[in-house]
Image (cartoon, rainbow, N blue to C red; front, top):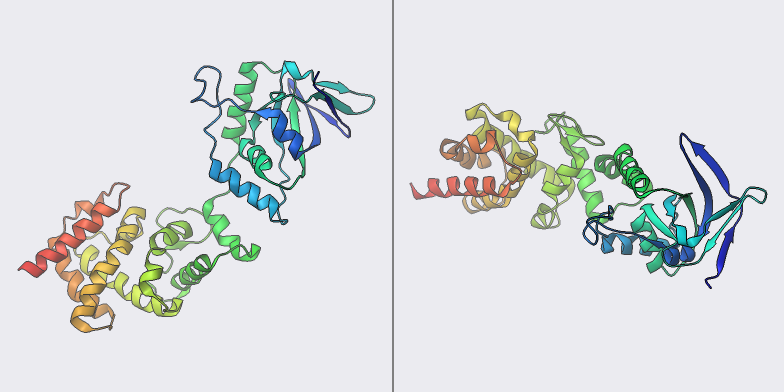
Amino acid sequence: MSEKESFGSVSLVRQGEHKFYSFTMPSDVLADTCYVINRDEDPIEGFQRELDKKRATEIANYIDSGLGTIPSSIVLSAQEDCEFTYDSKRKSVSFKNISKAFLIIDGQHRVYGFKLANTALRIPVVVYDNLSKRDETRLFIDINSKQKGVPTELLLDIKKMAEYENDIEQFLRELFDTFSTENDSSLYNKLSASKRQKGKITRSVFNTAMKPLVKFFGNKSPDEIYDIYNSYLVAFSEGVLAPHGIKEQAVNTTVFKAIAGFFPIITARVKDRFGAIYTVDNYYEFTKLIGHRIKPIKLEKPTNAYKPIVDHLEESLKQEFTL
């Protein structure tokens, strides 16, 4: 016989045709009694996505850090074999402690994280009882389609306030903010810090494009990098984009990443000819030549892949040196 678990301070909540029970459960009990069925394992009955073990491990490490708190409820469906019961007088629930007592509707990564963690926590849960397979699937769809995640742009923007930034994120934030506020910036009024806006580069896209360049710049400060990279952007816009009337493409996500990817290549040419003097004029000596050779359609209608554009720009640069 499986032992029975019992928990008090339970709230019975009714919403429309459904009712559920809200209470807290120790994380180790939760980990031992919950399961999922993913779509790959069971194409007929399964509806969960494949478990991301890396994400679950990150949750476990967060819990074990001693700073972790996870207040959001795990949503469960009590299975018949666990004999889930509610005592309205005592405001308590009881169920058999078996491995498949509850099907996880929402929160599988958190539950697996609890299983991996060494630290035990008290976890809020919402338990539905007597759901059919159709009801469980519909509830999963509703939760995952009606809830909207916080945009990456907003999370990046507030990391400083939360003191969660690593060194590279702090560096990129300072660089982004400089490009966003300096009047002579090629990206002035073309950046959006905390949300997606048409015709503007978000902080997350900026970070993705610029992060590979951090090592390239070595020990230069954000202000030094701003001076160099801004000179390059101005020269690229005037030498490559302007002649074809496509300056607005500078803030296309794919093109922006391609421009960043091409930077080390053209900078090496500038250094060979002019030394470490990275001015707009020195970059323009090369971008104006590239502008004569490129196929504008590559920048006007880019795909989601930026590397082919980098390759095309590099090939255009090589052509000029073979003349």
